Amino acid sequence: MFPKLKPGIKGKKELIVDVKDTAANYGSGLVDVFATPAMIALMENAAHSSLQDYLSEGFLTVGSEVNIRHIKATPAGKKVWVVSELMKVQDKKLTFHVEAFDEDGKIGFGTHTRYIVEKAGFMANL
Image (cartoon, rainbow, N blue to C red; front, side, top):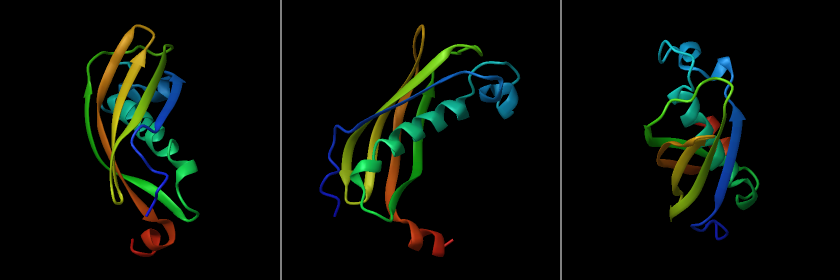
């Protein structure tokens, strides 16, 4: 259905941790460190944006599952980046390995699942 989609497609996104990206701001904690939900959002962004050149017009992907470990805190002001790699394609189901890093090393890792959907039909079924 999407012959260009093959394991090995990689994505990368980065940012400088701002106050808006912290656990204290997200409400997921009380300190000014990179929030786990912000890390997961960056991971999803890397995965979905890596596919844009491989999908037909009118199609997109939606996230459906994350299995992530956040293993190290990153203070505001530090650079973080995430990398994604498409590991498995099963019809419309796409499985990614994702990793997050800051200037001192790995801060998180796991898997992320996305599904290919036709945008108009997806929105009509809401």
